[in-house]
Length: 250
Image (cartoon, rainbow, N blue to C red):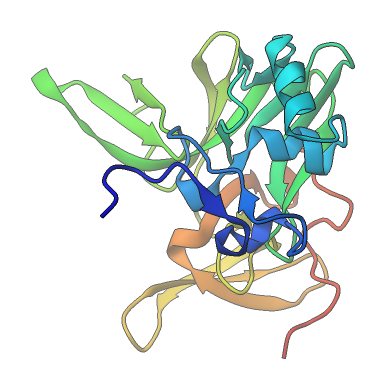
């Protein structure tokens, strides 16, 4: 009987959001331990090989990473299976390109091209706000960051604008009625809408009702909400479809 952590991952077991073909081989990249959960992350090798097409195979992707020109959130990463995740900033120095990792309305990871100015900050969802030893307040974000002495008005489920160069909070967005949110999971994944109301369903789960830019209303779980703006104003640039699902699911 095998012991220890499995270091391999079969392609059919890989998440659908990776968009891997069934006939592309037996194996798939297995994400390393990092700031994002295993099946909520996107290995760096798939960014270079499958999305950007800068590498034709595994060996070429490793050679690109060894040149130390790939940065994730302004930090050099050389591990091919490093787990990138939602809202991560991927920068390539030699081509002077910057991308923000988002999800489309089908739940698949996409690389959204952004300008250099927008790549200097990142949106982070607050998943925990509490006090540590000696009563020191701190918050924990969705990408594993622990930030001490935050603004006392920042609460759980709010979103902070984090400066990647100076490593500090520059602003925050409150979760409330009228906030602009992107859905990170469930049947409405990838859709963007304005919060209309908050309530509970028949099994006492917290539910949020939203309305997209076309005026279509939809609902999702409270845990799938990620605030990205206030009203119609988004703090980040959005993909071409603006989070609007073209084909309505019946």
